[in-house]
Image (cartoon, rainbow, N blue to C red; front, side, top):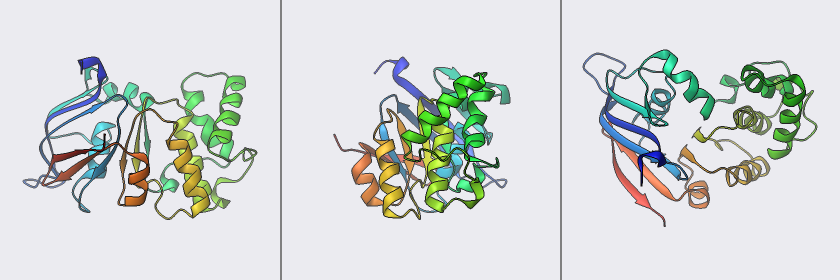
Length: 223
């Protein structure tokens, strides 16, 4: 693969929450465009931490973070990353903060400079895509857990990201909303999923990475 195929390149990455203790220890990782992969590992192994480092929400102690072919080290370096990579948080309530569904989905496109008219089309298109047409005026906090999850996914998809990072995306969903989520996922080109749901992973991934001991030390390809 050429360098242009690499969406994420991490080298010798170190991160710890307390002095002298590392969650990520000299971690090397490359993620390529078109991969549909899982990031697995024991609870507390640093999977969510790694996602937050990639998005610039946490700053590594050392090492190189290269995303879309550019090294990212300053806060401003990640503005572009957050536009082009969509992070779905484990808790939908951390992602939804507006009174109505349409306001939540509109937030990203409007911040990208889209017009109100274009944003309206994006909202409608996105809600159809996640299987929630007509939900524009619904009050966000009154939605069911599954509906919130799909709306949260919609807020990410509305930004038209090149890569999705998904943290336990179907945990707690009933069968109806789970199937809707999987259907949307199958239309996405590149994604990395944290999940303990073996049935989900068997259906939607091609490759599995394992994070253990602060390093990604195993890869299993299903191809």
